[in-house]
Image (tube, rainbow, N blue to C red; front, side):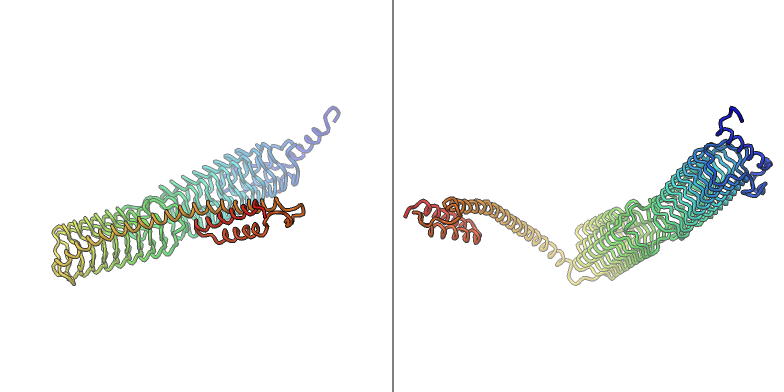
Length: 571
């Protein structure tokens, strides 16, 4: 073709060949449920071609584009049923693309624009779609198993009945996406934004959803067995059934106020000591046998939760109304101001626990160990302490109206200033019980190994002895502190004086060296009494090494002075 550049002529010729070989595609070919109009790969044969500098034909439906290169291209032509296996479409502009039924297995679509694209029924297994933009795209019935979509923006996309087994959605933005009946088994969606999405009957088995944002999603019939929900946000989700999942979400949907104990999250036997963030509400959860030692649960609601036999030594709780804490190990637990109304703590270990100002109305402590517990100012009306061990328990200023202390052991306990109208002490052991200023106390039926008068006497005497002992102890502590301070001061002064004498001995040695001959040997023919000088120098070093107090250092100073005097004295 005279006058036409060779490169343009080649492009036009190739385009014409592609157009002549392209099949006719009915307009309804891409509708859901219809069969493809042709066999994938039976169209134009452009396998392995670099199409980035070519003019694309008007239709590439069913084209053979295996391993073809379309990086950065703006593609407006139909690609229905095209075979793009292993093709490179990095950064390609495929918005609104017609790619239903296309084969894109192991294709590279990283950073590609796929907004509103039609990829229904397509094969995207093992495809790379990191940082791509398939928002509002259609993936109904597509197979994306093994694909990577890290940081992809797939919000409001349609994934109905799609297969996403093992897909990497790490940090992806898929909020509002419709994934009903999709298979997301083993999907990696850590920190993914999936809020407002639809997961109706979605399979999420073994999925990694740690830190994912799932709030306000619909989860009717979703399968979370084996899914990791550590730190996930599940606020206001609908119809979530998280049975079989693992990890503790950061937020959970608020449970029904009339929920049945044990119907919430299932953490039976879990070790939860390493959980950094608990959800705000674990009401009705089942934590039977869980380990919670030292865990701070003051911000977690545990109303009607099952906490039987939990190990929670030193743990902090604030709300556990109606909870089942039978046999719980709560030694030294921090339960100050906690609401335990109606809770069952039968047989629980609460020795040394801090329960000050707690609400214990109608709580059951039958057979519980409350020795040395601090329970001042508690409200425990109608509480049941039958058979409880309450030795040395501090019950000062508490309210125990109609409480039951039947067969309880209250040896040396303190009920002073407590309100006890209607409280029952039948069979209780009250030896040493302090009841000063207790209101309406009736110890009928209780037993004591000593009379109340003697108890009062020994109480006053003990208080006097305590103050005397406290005064003596305080004085002794002050004396010991003063002795230690003086010893420390002496040690500082000694070290400073020792350093000075060490320098003094060193200078004497230097003075001896300065009077030696040039070969470093002592001039014995002089008039200096070298025997006296060297004896003094050696004696000073030995005395310094043995020095333990200021008098020893004075001896060192004296010996050094004797050595210097010998240096200046003539024979």
